[in-house]
Image (cartoon, rainbow, N blue to C red; front, side, top):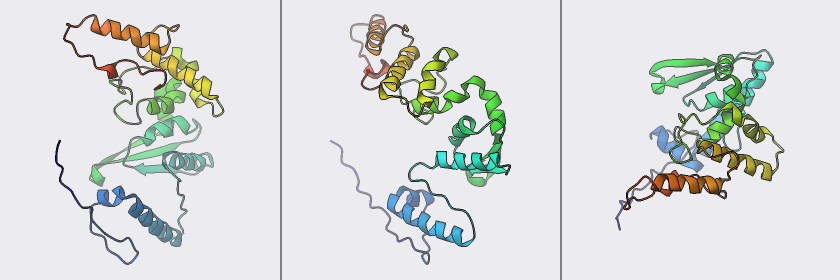
Length: 231
């Protein structure tokens, strides 16, 4: 057992008349206080004649779709952000004929920003553009994959999987077809035969791994392909 130190959260009230002197991270980590802050911020923006849009959950898609609509209407569309994650959605969702710019701010506005263009991203990704959101989600939406030891540099996507990946872009695809596509991709990712299922691939990987190790080797099960239920 390990005893932990109890740390009390900073107490503060969010109101237009209050000056809250705490770190930005502390404010944004408090879900309720963050909601209150955004409410007051929205009111002030609306008073200043700004258009305010609020997403019910994750705002990434709303941000990119709004910029995309503006760009397709002939307006300049520039997204200023500190997170490179939006680049995935810009490349995948923005139309080739419309240009959306993404200014990635580095170093808390103390370092020169990088500016990306949706058209150039389309050219760079080529045939992989349609698979970007699937790949991003499959990799855990971050720099480390949700699948153990399968990071963003695994090079796990190739054109042979195009039809499998396309199923995830069909909004009305059935649950069975999505599950089947997910299993096929798992098998491909772990080097299994196209005729193998997840369990057969998992068994083969287990035999390949333990067969080369000494008797006292401790197998890390997370290294194996996920089960059909997990995938």
